[in-house]
Image (cartoon, rainbow, N blue to C red; front, side, top):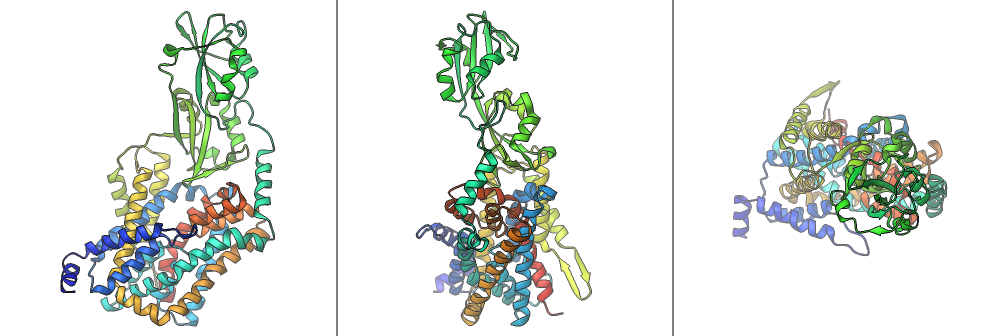
Length: 562
């Protein structure tokens, strides 16, 4: 034990990284499809390791780690958060607000009824509402109250205890409620409703000529015989399936194809489109030839397009196709992602700012179509560190601002400020991708390491006190956590279904988003046997991340004795 204590005193970071490593591995273990999650496991491992001795983790280190995490949350959510401030998504915003406001109300009722201290109340809220970032914002708010060191450590230990007891059950209850209990509460069959929603979105029709519907991009070369004397538009229309004549070579000279161009015998034409359509195209054009020289500089591209044209926000895919018009010629939409999740493609699928379209076609065709949609993403391997560091620094500066409301001091804290600047920087990067490079892989790494390191630091530094609090109040905290989790979910379900009259499938997706539980989205899709629940996730997820994170300092302010 002497050696262990020497290591703890000399290099506590070894145990911090060990807690992150072991907790991450345990968080990935699945039992019958269920996993505890990385954050909860890191905290549990850290609290256990914290019993080995007294860990001194510098507050500056914890602050930097959490600021990295919460800034990344804001950066990811920024485009969708600001895009949600419109009438088209108001109902989905309302679901997230109901979850947050109801959760705050329930926590305050229990805090005053059982005389819970601010740390315990914030920990219960963080775990019961499954929002780990609330730990950091609450801790930051407590640190600005001028508490003695011992009292501050005890409050932080209470946050860890409240979170550790309530998070796992809150997570499980959310996983069960959203796909199973919510449909019963609304009196609907989720699978049947999802099928009806898909039918209503597609209208049972195929994408029209000029649509951006999904196709596998292929290119083949044909020698014109049958199609001699016919126009480009006539040939494309006869073959159908949105095929496009991308190039015409006549007497070894390239001719720019246009709808009225008449093909001549011996012309070599490059046809792009779905493989199934190209196979039978020879009957309408002429024999397929090798055409290696013609195709050499015409390789197909797969490019991601960030939707940042404000006029497209909330419009359906069909409406966007009409706006793009002929500039969609030869371009195919392979998939659509929103908040990292794939969205089902139908003519009535609505597009929002921050969505990422994956387009297939020649580079010139994609560039032409992208000019109407947004910005072609060419991911850099390096992040713009100056942009990110400057944004976090500005956020921490804003977090120092404190407003007096009677006897209350209201402050966002450093973490809250970093979140706000993260939202702003994410929005700026959407408008100007060239100035705010922050590749998705880098976002994931920094976010995971920031949260994992912060949680491990909290668990190690407050391990003994947290364990004592769990032993003393564990059952009470567990019972309160159940109510804190279920009450907002029930209230939001009834409000969305009965008052807002939202589609039940969208309601389920919105509930998962508002509670920021990704696994609940997957559960909805499995039960519905459809991807349509994803349509309701992105906006509540972005708003929920912000609202629930800000609840930390708000709970501390309202429960701290005046």
